[in-house]
Image 1 (spheres, rainbow, N blue to C red):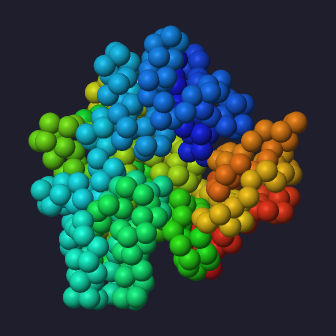
Image 2 (tube, rainbow, N blue to C red):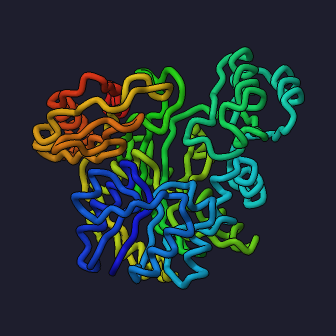
Length: 423
């Protein structure tokens, strides 16, 4: 098969790393890719949002399957454009991608399908939103309705923080048009998990679970980020919780999308809060998570491309997803200043030494090749994954690898997975 992956981050490097192992693969392209994907595939100088260019390239190169990584091209309709050109795409239509493109849409789907989720209200007027906050108090959650690169959610512990969030999102427009509407919802309390499923429109296949660490600071402090690290199958993701997640949040959503005439095909990612009475939906994403992708795929023992092909062709029931025993952990190395302003161009040394640690794979997220070396070229720069006999060993290996890196302008959280292993 000739395959094209869309995207340039750590998730896309991990997808390329996994797909490159498949006996079905004959040629792999990544658009635009990064220095990590360049070692596995042919990078193509096309922006992820260049839908017309992607379709043209796929036709010219006789691509058999396109695998979009990030959400933005899906919301922009890349799957629709590819389908119109007769090219298979493992990703939802623009209409189905509204499960991530609009928090309001997600809540409406959840209510219609009786999916357990937090009580909520929507607002298009900032004054009305402020009045509502005064009425309900804190803690409370404020979400920009549209796409905000994982940074559009504020969990406000005080009323002052809540008002500041509404002002920033709706009045100061820190997320642009994405904040024209907001969802204000009840603050759920428990342990968060990310549950992934491959979907072919009507059927769903469980594809692993992880716990992301969203806040930039240790002890889950500071602003939300795109993800500072993740662990595979955290201890609170019991089999009962995972079974309920599939039956109460994944499959009902698929049925509701079919009812609406917009069946969902692709990776469906349910962000859940595990409360005392079971898992409740926080949000859906319409693609693999990042850095969860870099954490789950190293544990996958079955063939990824076979599963993606079957799902894209509506044959999901014919395949299985098998995962190895043990633990997997990813720690993200970021440029100082992230998720605020950060500098690029600093050199990263020691990648070979870090990658030599047993069980470690380093995925490039925001790097640039330079005269045989690598420079930082983003906020989240490296995703350092390690696998082991258990989570504790995986975490030890990941941090050992990070200790071998020499990057003066980089930082990471030092407490990824700490609560899960009881440290």
